[in-house]
Length: 94
Image (cartoon, rainbow, N blue to C red; front, side):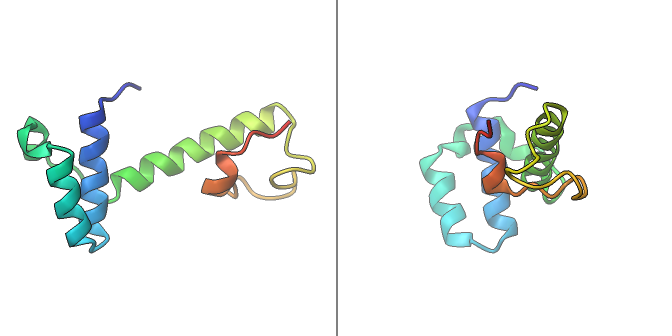
C-alpha cells in the first residue's frame, strides 16, 4: 500500500470532521493546503482512518504472535486476537 501525504491529510481531515472537531478541521484544512488538492471531491466512507489503523494493529499483532514475542510482553498468548492497543502497537518488543 502506498499513499501520499495529501491522501493522509485528507483522511485526517475527515476524521476530525466526523469527530465533531470542526475548528480543528478548519485549521487543519487551511494549513495542509487541501483546498489545492483534487482529493476534496473524493467520497470516502465514514471511519476510514480508524479502520486502516485497526487493520494495521491486527497486522502488527499477527507479526508479533508469529515471532512468539507476546509471552510476557504486550499481552499473553491466551488473549483473543485484536487485543493489541494503539500504544502497544508502536512499542518494539524483544
